[in-house]
Length: 429
Image 1: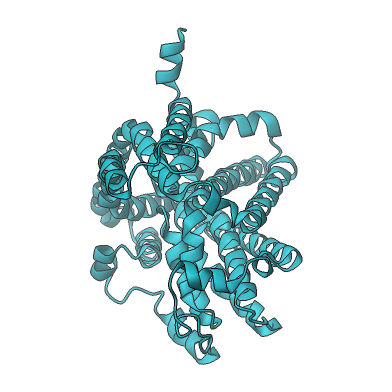
Image 2: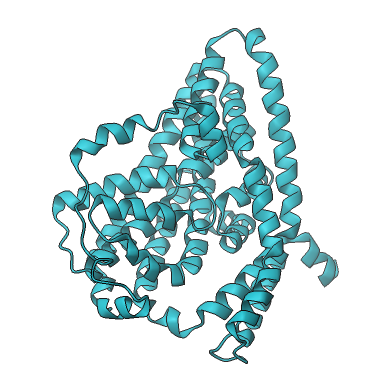
């Protein structure tokens, strides 16, 4: 096989080449080591370079809601028996809660130990963004009286509104209710709707697979814009914070290694080598939604996961399993609390853990969504949301890494529940 054919056959290699070229072009256009193009000209150039990324993300937003809904409903019905629903449905949900809790506890430990927010001076933040004293005023935090309303809003009162607004958690809950209800009625009654949803699933997956062809071009445009505008000096100022997040994400990858070895009983090196394609795509696009077709293909074709498992775990995990995002959010909250000299009590830390767990489940799996949800967590504990301005300068890099961890967690879960379902089938025989 020639080098050209090898490159065109492997999406991860195309993306890696786009990353390298994008970083190089970004440095040339930026102020640090390049020609220092004027801001107006730089905005003009990067606006055109971002066109492939805009088209790609528009395609994702266009079909991701029907894809998630149809995938969950079809997957639940494909499981068939109530016993299988208990094995996967409750089992997968419990598994995701456990791994997300581990991620949050790792984040609390590292953020408390390293204390990255104590290194920076808040006056630098205030001066850089021209903030008034009112902007950085500490607000009243979360009240326990808010819990009932927060929980009750998870159930979609109007599924059409949830669909139009892209409320992924509400859509997921609605899909679970519909899917479970369809299993409780005669198959003949559920068959017409099931066939329609199966067609929707196949069509939307085909559109997603087609959209993946423009990923290398989208990555190039995004990376050029990020590197040329942010530069190296501004990112270096938040180095300790970034190191803390990356260290936490690395620990989560180690947790997945242990799970693969001792629970899924899989060889680590060969398994992780098969993770390479979805990991590279998720790292580049910072969207586990956009990576989902590649993740599904890897699970079924490379890892030989039972399709009944993969078609349930991957869409379900893409929506609710956000270990990397949860870890990032907790470290970010601690970082800003330290920056604003806010002493976090044990109750406040508990609120952060619970809120982060719920927020990570409801975080849309698209680029930058973690930062948007972070503002909600900050408000619950009384930290000025304006601190997010400081994090945005380096968020794109961390978003790429934490998305890769999220996708790795989904694939690990697939391996675990493939092993569990196989073991149960063997026991019956």
